Length: 395
Image 1 (tube, rainbow, N blue to C red):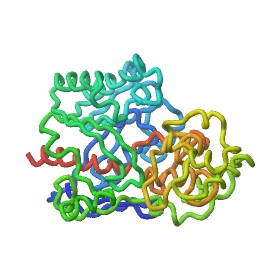
Image 2 (cartoon, one colour):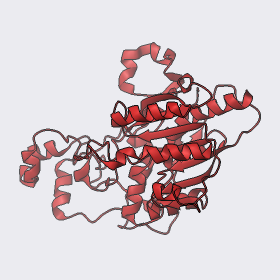
Image 3 (cartoon, helix red, strand yellow):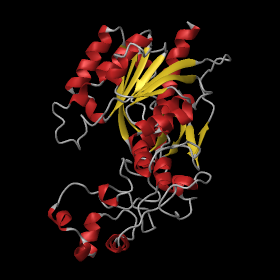
Image 4 (cartoon, rainbow, N blue to C red):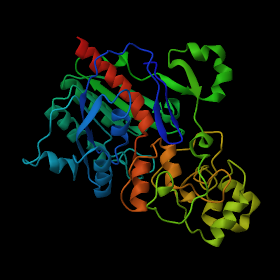
């Protein structure tokens, strides 16, 4: 599990693992459900010598399916997963692994009506596909609130009846080379081995703030690979990019094809300029320019400290959501330029390589970027899955 992955200027770079790797190249068949643009598939298929090949995928969003097919081949089926698996004309192919993130809005803290939300039960068709495909491993991804919930207990109980042993963990993307402090929950099921032996994967990167406290023990800590690297930062991810041009995607070479800006109002520009320093946010705006601060922000005295905030050059970004181009929705202002981050910058914070193809309107592309599992995080988890499969293959 001692593998280090990194991303330099948008290019996925994989260093050789320091564990024994068989001379034979294995290929494992992969199904990705609720796939979106394919962040999970990318992490599985583009790392470690390409051992995973996607054979079937699904998403209900037309443009997400188009993006997936443009990158992985024409086998992403558009539509509701329940309707698809009930359609006698749809054949679920054989697979070694089923991965996917059932809709997470039902668990999200942003969902005020999450109690009783039917989207909390979409793990059921996920497990049906696992059974019909014959897969002996599954990986389910969701928001951290899934763990410890009633649905989590139901998933565990159902999967155990199906013959799976289980492991689960909350992982921080920054610990695996993603320049973003995004937390996701993963449940790994395996029929032929205990996944706790290989999961969660060892961390390849560490929070520099912990280095002083951990001192030399950091590099002996079994949670980390040998010689882990510091968290990747906003500077690492986007410092090479010029100022954006225009307000639409352009038919030019990456990375500048989706590196475009917006047309902010005069009031918005004044607000940006009123909080010029890294890390400033809406509270700083109220202190320095109360006349520019919306009344609703003045009334809201707690919570939402990352709203209308600037990123720090030398820290990872905060969680990238689907409306990252709206500074009022989160900490999405460039560290020094008076503007929100661009689609390209958001894609890099998610660890998408520059040559990944996004299709659809700029709103749809933003949704694909924000909803994705960071490929670099998926690649780390894929290493655990690969270890299990190689263990079985070598018998």
